[in-house]
Length: 246
Image (cartoon, rainbow, N blue to C red):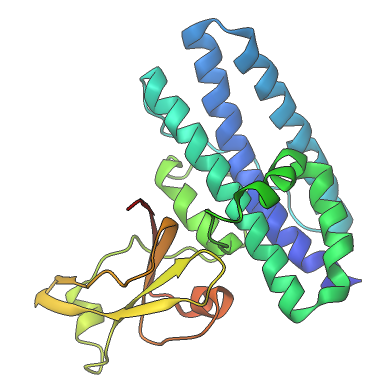
C-alpha cells in the first residue's frame, strides 16, 4: 500500500503546485477582464486542490500550501502562461503513466483512477496530446514552476528535487574533465543526447539532433540513461522546454 501511494503523492505534489499557480492566473484574469468564465475556471481548479489534499492526508504527507507567484501583467501573457501550465501538467501525467506501465503495470489502473479524482481534465487530454507531448517527471515539472514562485513564499517546500536553471558553468565544466551532454526528451521515445562543446568557461553549444519536434525537454547531464526517469535522477541542471516546429 505504501508503494502504491508514493507515485500518487509525487504526481499530486506537482499537480498541486500547478493548480495553485493556475488559480492565481485565473483570478488575475478574472479581475482584469471582468469575465465570469475565468472566475468559474478558478473555482473548478480549486476543487482539484481540495481533492489533492485528501490524497496527501491519506498518505500521511504534508499538504503543499499555496505560494505567492510572480505573474506577468498583460492579459495575453497570462493566457499564454495558462496554456503552458496545462501542457506541463498533461506531460507530467503522461510521464507518470509511462513510468508505471514499464515498471509496475498492476498499479496503472488504480493510479489512473486516483489521478482522475484531482486532475480529471488533464487525464482526458492525455490521449489527445500524446502525438505532440513528451512525458516528464514530477521533479522536472516542479523545477519549471519555481521560476514563478516568489522567494520564501511557501511555508512548506514540496519534497521534490529541484535542479538549477539549465546553463553550463565553469564549475560543471571543470569537474574531472567529464564529458557533458544535453539530454533531449521528445515524444514517447528514449532520450537523445548531444555532447556539449564549450565555447568559454561558462557557456557552450550543442547541435540540435534530428527528429525532434513538438514539445521538447532539455537537461544537462554527465551520463546517457535510456529513459526520462533515470535522466531526471542524474540531471545536473534544467529542464528547459521548447516547442520545435518544422
